[in-house]
Image 1 (cartoon, rainbow, N blue to C red):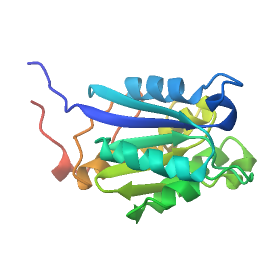
Image 2 (tube, one colour):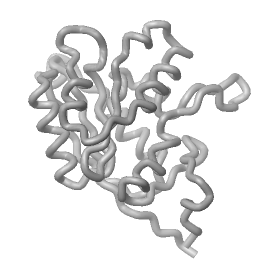
Image 3 (cartoon, rainbow, N blue to C red):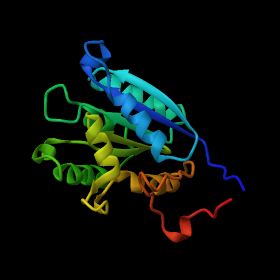
Image 4 (spheres, rainbow, N blue to C red):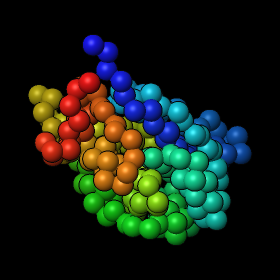
Length: 197
C-alpha cells in the first residue's frame, strides 16, 4: 500500500543586507531547503526570497507568501539586538496571533549551546492560515532549534520547535504534515493522528 501525503507550500526567507546584495553567498535558504526536505515526508513546493534587513520589505514579503498559500513561512536572520535587526518587528506587524512558546523554546535550545542565546529576539505568529517562525541566521543554529538538543546517547535533552509545527498547522486549517521520525518526531494528541492510508 503506497502512502499519500498532503502537498505543502512553504515560504523560506533569508534576511540579510550583505547576502541580498551579493557581498557573500546566502547560506540560509539552502540550509532551510535541505533540513525541510529531510524532515518532512510531504511533497514540498518552496517559495524562496532573499531580501535586505528592511522592515517594510520583510512585512510585505511575509504577507505575499501567506497570500500565495504557504502554510508555513520560515525566516532566517535579523533577530539580534543590532540596529538593522528588525525581523521580529516586521513579523509582529503582520500577525493576527502571536505564538510566544516558539521563541521561548528556541532560546532555551540555543542556551544549551551558547550563552548569547538570550540576545535572540525570534518570534512566531499566525497570519490567516499560516504559521510564520523567525529562525536564527546560522545553518547550524537553524538545525539545532528545529531539531532540539540531544544527549550523548542520542536521547532528547531539549525538544526542537518543529515537533509542535505539524499540530499547530492542523489547528489553523493547513495540510497534514508528516515528519521523518529519525530527523524530528512531530507530536499530535492521539485524537488528531490521521490513520495510515
